Length: 409
Image 1: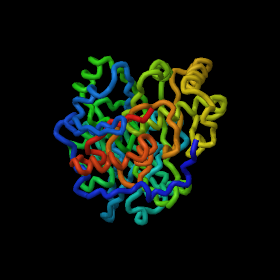
Image 2 (image 1 turned 120 degrees about the vertical axis):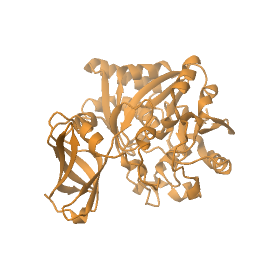
Image 3 (image 1 turned 90 degrees about the horizontal axis):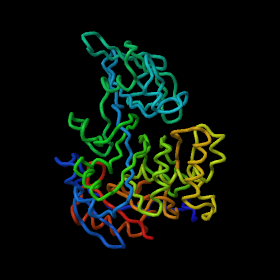
Image 4 (image 1 turned 30 degrees about the vertical axis):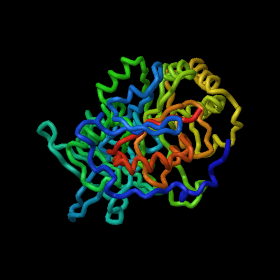
């Protein structure tokens, strides 16, 4: 496997005019344009017809994470505004789901707008009416931790979980390149129709185009669907500031998959496995590597794939079937119905894909790790695809149009 550490991020740039960035979604989710790239050829359609471009008996894999209202605004007694952006739970919690279900108080890693105006230990308060009573949310600055801050959030209604508190006090955080304030409609549209498990601060946007009608069309063609959960962190928007990739620290994300899902993957290895979104793809490929290092998994809590480790393995270490079966058998031995793990894997040109043959994804920012992933998947023709999308008035980024990309055999 070729190591992509020496890649220059400048080689993955293109000119993206501001007017091509979608500020709002289309009125109908499945009316978004769809670019199909297969065998070096490009055709155009719309998402509601996507089933026409997928072979029977394929497996589409979706990320069923749900975006939380992670943006909290507090006003100090002096009038100043402190913005708290909840990134991820403190490491004392085993996973995001556990942290979201905390009552009374929780510790969270956050970004702070106006941090210089907020003294360590100082308590901020926000009050709303809930069931005719005052519901109070307090935020206490505990300490700085790297690029984030550890904040204790506490509330005066012990019946409410932190997920419920965020829903009442917070706002959906739109990506930084959508330069407008969040509106009421974003609560629904910046969420997939199948979102289920709360924990993301950004949507798995490839799935925003899917509707009940599209799922019915897939079912009629005997195209199977499977769901995993990867909670998308703000790191997905982290720009690559280093000139070469070895100096960039990839963001880590938590994911959960069930044992029955892994069995479904094994059953489809001789067919087509299509990742709906880069988060699904990163998880699927990470499962292969968890299988390869299954003996380590037994000692590691939670299991983790680090940024560069997969590039140190021999390409012929293990087949996809062997790796997934080892992971499945280990779960059987341990009596596990699901596995939660963390992946920091960086997928860039030089990576050899083990599981995924098709990718459904939106159009990504220049010089981003998401664009590196696309370039790894379809090769140098990523430029041809993006040039076509720009020339054909496709809408870009989270609320934009998308593509169905087939990997070369």
